[in-house]
Image 1 (cartoon, rainbow, N blue to C red):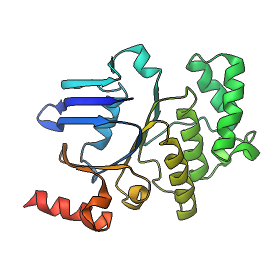
Image 2 (tube, rainbow, N blue to C red; image 1 turned 120 degrees about the horizontal axis):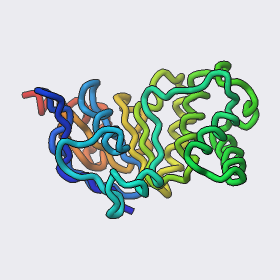
Image 3 (tube, rainbow, N blue to C red; image 1 turned 60 degrees about the horizontal axis):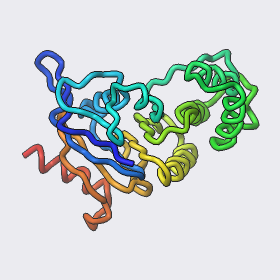
Length: 233
């Protein structure tokens, strides 16, 4: 299982949002850190096939990002995920499963499994508009897992969550990383400090660090800030 990002760039008129990034990602949780405007969301949207790179290629086990079979292995939770507030959690997942072409019997079984996984079984028939921010984010994770993705991309998934919800969410992501490639984008260092197998740091569209943070022999937040200070000199 391998995601290869080869010299990928994205340019908007005079601004280079992502500048020739190359990465090889394997099974595990990969934490993508960077300040707002670093290019994280642009990179993730390219990995999901929403944006087309202006240069470079993206492949998963040899399958190009533009192919239908690539989308079949992809799960995505964007930063601003749209919900249907009048839907119940169960009906929402069944609706999205239908859009993904998942057979009805499998969709019903998968919906039950995922609501249990994200601890929403007891509110499966309640309308989404009654959910807290953390509950909506957990439902977002559930929808991203409907098609049993091998590649899971999460863009700022813990923004706005309280500490208890954040811990619950991190535990779930850590578990998912055991069998899949998970790319978790955030500007909150503590979100990935204890669960990331690899840390990636972006600044001004470029990848300025890739590695295991334990190897730095200092806490991740200090290391993260030091990297930025080094690159700004």
